Image (cartoon, rainbow, N blue to C red; front, side, top):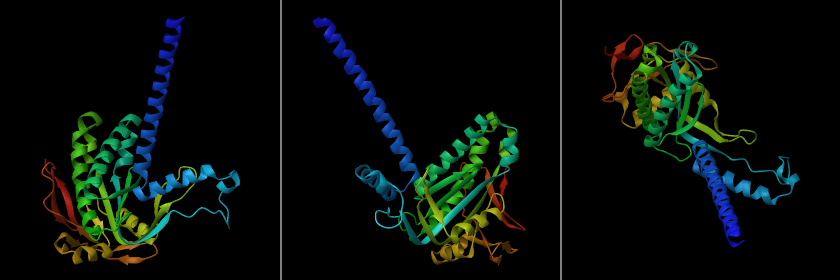
Length: 288
């Protein structure tokens, strides 16, 4: 009887320990996901709200006007620089690739972007398909937000060249033809969390739209910046990075805009790209 009881307790302890490990691993995974999606300050606000919700009655948990309404998790940031990037040629390339290959490429590419963003102090907002969105000056003020973002954008161009060449053996030689179109704009931005199903940290405002237009009207292999970003770079003593685009671009709702290409030398030692100047401004040229 003693041996049987001892065996039962041992088995029970093993099961409890296993359950605790599973709970801990899930908690760690959940925490890592939340940390990657939200700034530290916002993450703590969300956790605090979750704890408060447990103490409220079900009626108080619901959104409603008047007393008991949850305070919005949002703030306005006067000086930010927003980054939009898109993989040029991705749609055609992905049409002849398997889902595994597509995600292998994007995870490798975005993983390198994330590492560079962390090193530069850039906050990643989200990825939408083959597009990558990031910001500086949020969630903490950064006086050199435009300089930091310009350097990050240069890093991204170098990373794209490196990654597309590294994976070409497994994903096909056509992968080397993929490039990046990058747009930057500086200005005030509202940022916060839209609660609800799959709530996430987001940016709002005209600055976001303008940054998106800088990317969509840009040139593959280049960093196109607005006048506002160029002004910040000039003020920071980085005017030598800026090359005016010869022709003005037309932006919906804004008309014609003078934009600039950002050229920061030298390029990364591992990159096979070099910068040359063409009719549209600086371009990436891949050595053979």
